[in-house]
Amino acid sequence: MTNLWTAIRTRRVLTIAIGVLLVAGVTTSAVLFGFAYGDPAKAVNATNSSASSTPGDFSQFRNDPAGFELAYPTSWSKLTSKDPQVLLLLAQGTQDSFLVRSSELQAPVGREQLPAAKQVTDKIVNANKTVQMIAEPKQIELGGLPGFFYFYSFKDPTSGQEGVHSHYFLFNGKTMISLVFQAIPKDRFTTSAQTFDKITATFHALKK
Image 1 (cartoon, one colour):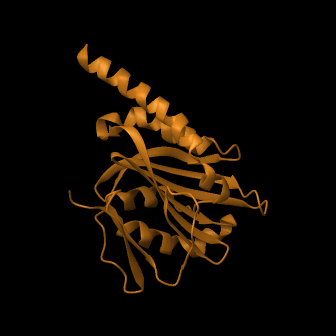
Image 2: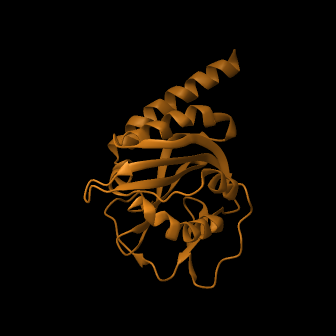
């Protein structure tokens, strides 16, 4: 009975967190940015592999409060955001982009809490009414953190073009880290996939 009550309380807290995150604007980037996609099986398999060495033409990015580190192409432009939850925003021209967001939850999420946490991630993704799932969301582990991988298409509100999204939700205690890639139009993915995979492969959680 105690375990059941704990599970119920966790679901209630995470459900409340959905409203908090949506009001805070977590879905803004999902609406404004498409996120690169690739072969779903390849993408998910990549999340389960150990981080590779950083390419020589990449720059390091580290955020101690959120507890992670990654690297990105030095040639990409680093942009600014007024949203304090956006930790990193990069772009290569107008077709490729990469965003990292950190959001604080009201309760810590580990592997046991992932089923309840999926209520949050599902609602964040589906807040964009143009989203069409290409594959079912998958539970993954990336860089030592548990989470989910979403693979879907969307319609860019500015250009009207169709893009595709590669969206990772990772949980580090009470911190939810979102990695969002973009390629517009969707045919652009063929060119962008290799770079996106290289960025993803550099992500890892910092040792506590």
